[in-house]
Amino acid sequence: MFLSSIALADAETEAELKEARSDMTSNPQRAYELAVKLDQKGNCHGTGILASLYGKGEVVKKDKQKMIELHTKSANGGCALSAGLIGTFYRTGYPPILPVDLNKAAYWHGKAFEFDNSLCNNAKWAATIYDENGNQVDALNWYKKAHSQNSCKSDQDIVSRIKALEVTQQKQVEDMREDPPVAGIKLSIGGSGDSPSKPKKKPKKKN
Image 1: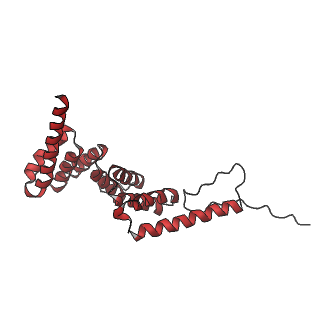
Image 2: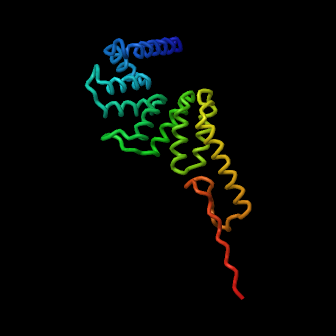
Image 3: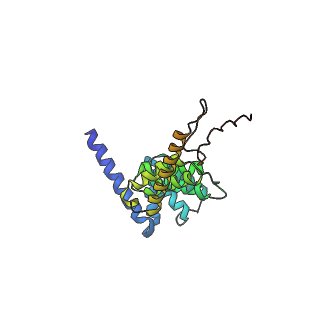
């Protein structure tokens, strides 16, 4: 009986969510009512719909601050679309509410991909942020995650960056083998994006 009640509640929530999504354009007032109900239930998808309605300002007064708060709540609840939007807001900046913060942008784009890996562009954005800021190790990792999904397999930008970064990192490894670092000095393949610096050779003494 208890399990049956849970199943019925879940089915009701899914039906409300489906209706709220379809009503966002045709009947935004009804979508708002359902979104409020879903948000109160703790459904992150409903919270995301509510956030979008505050962003549009058709049924409720447009409130960018409230929109971002609700999308953040939705993202923290595990909803990929809101997480990706928060990542975009931090990547581009959303003045005067959010400044550009690339660390947070990469984090939220990464979380969006973790929540729903079919949204592979989020992995690509995380990779691009790391790539453009010199962190080759994380960039390559996220490019590969994006490329692992069918919808991004044919993206030539991703393919070319994977090849280029693999070549660069292989060259760095070979350089380190040829001229190993001095004991006690730790070198990293990633980080600044530059090749690891080689230890300086001592000049020969003149006779």
